[in-house]
Image (cartoon, rainbow, N blue to C red):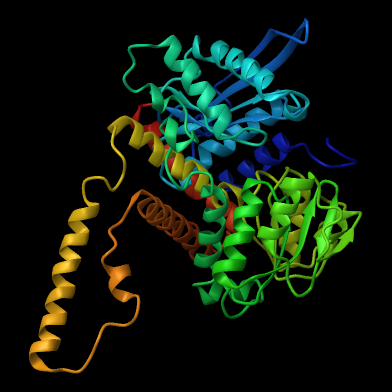
Length: 476
């Protein structure tokens, strides 16, 4: 229990799983096989820092190996514990199945406050943690492929990849041992923004379906929709930035750990992000009202609520006060099982975490494929596309001149049409296609089955069915 009468994150995941499998025809043995975590490795290691030995505790959990390698991030936080890591590993299994990436589910974590150590110290800690995992094949291109999570990023992934290659000098696919790397170290364009971009694509797809909007009591498109974002880390920042700058949403509040900013006419997300980067806090930002108790704004009036930080921020104590008709879970597990029950009863539509934040693992899949193929996406076809497009444009211009048709191409059209698809364009295209296809699989179950009244249950049913099919093919 995390608070009075409230279930832990692990229990919430298990109960949401139970709610779905009650509606499925699985044998008890297969159901149990999918439910349980296959293995969890706990490591305690020492690093000499500041003149003494510091001991750290880390975890790497493998939930399901119905497909390999298994995939899942590594987070750095003082809250990391075995139950949390195992719950996150289970979510990764279901997430990968839902968006049809060929991975099983895994997760890792190190119980550490990354802000308490300088860069050199963090590198020593990360390399030693990676060493402990690598020597047990818990980091390996064909078996277990980590990625960034809360408290980690490109820098840590580059250290891990380098450590793997130092220990496996003849592995030509060494770069594929981890994803989320910087582009100069074998990463892929669009990975940093991927989870936030996926949230944007998920909302765009939701708003394409009138029946789905009607269930949330919403009409029209994203233009002008009032949005509250909780957490302006990597995911929340990119989601809010893209939704405001590209889709015309109005970001009326941003909630952070040290308070919140509120502005009914809309916050400039980029300006707030720059202020936080320079000041280390949102306090003092001049163009919005500061609210000391930021969690209070979770209950403020808006059209879309985006919890994009920690799990369990919407719970039984505040769920009844939530006014947003649509919640999209950019974080893992931000709505507890108890809160989910209350919100469903109220008619709130929740776009679940296993789908909403799957942009990261989707683009990680693209990066893994890139590393295995040893070639940048777009390198072979980009100029061929441009040459073919140029032939078409030149022929149209010739016909116009010869026939004296009196028409010209619209300003800017020619340059856009003649630009071939580079890596970033291909990554975004693949991500959008993945998010749209996965949403359609969920909504099909949501609308066609009378016993399914929410997207989360629909997502679990789709995912578990795919995992079950994989296990059956292995004669398990």
